[in-house]
Image 1: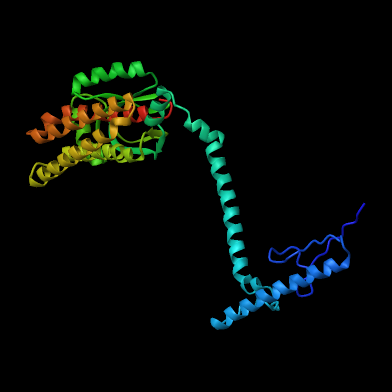
Image 2 (image 1 turned 120 degrees about the vertical axis):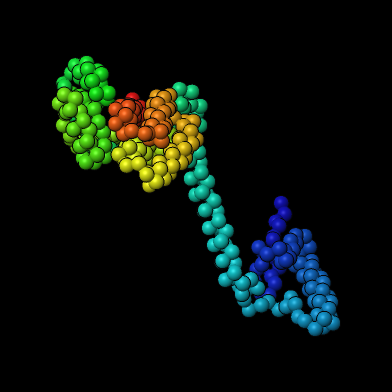
Length: 334
């Protein structure tokens, strides 16, 4: 059996078996060392011829390619800084891509995302659209003319009918837990209701003045932008009540005209916002708007305060009750 020896040709004194430009010659010793020496001589002859051609080419172009002499350092070492920067940039891009991809995957594959993607039943969607924004508490403060307090709503309503038939104005309002008051007049200040007290007492009805606060909490609606409608609605009632106590004259006429413009703007705004309101809120807001329209019409056509006051006071009390019902319709769970 013949032995075969691998002969590696060295360039510049070092083995370059891993570089593509290095030449490795395998010679099988069939005729001994003479054939190997001949092969080596042929290699040097070809290499010398190639080097001569490169030299001549380099001289013609006045530049040296450095192919015949091994450089003192690898050619790529001078560009190490840029190579590192490029490598770091690539690595950073890869890491960023992986992290971002993971975050996106978590967001869109999480249970919350899946649940949101599901179709919402019509009834549930209706409730979410109509009651999902909580508003600030709304408070009202009035000077009232009170003519009785009862723990039974039925008894209070019975007595209110008797008083209304006598003086023309009476309404039952819940003022505390399990307490119902009969109110026959309303004003923003005590001096406004003082004249009503005197008038009612002359008719034999026992009444007294009292400051009454109304606060409505846990109010919900479809849009935070609805809030100006409900807040300005109570302000409009207070302004109209004040107008009813003003003496006739140019200032009063101007104030009435300005309030009428405010009313129309307020009503138009409510109409634009009401598309997502619940049925109960729409119903009560419509009733309250009707009260406000009637009150303003009475003030416009007023000729005698004594003639208008009972009717005006009853309409104002109805407006207060409808506003209270409007607030209840907005309360959570209503």
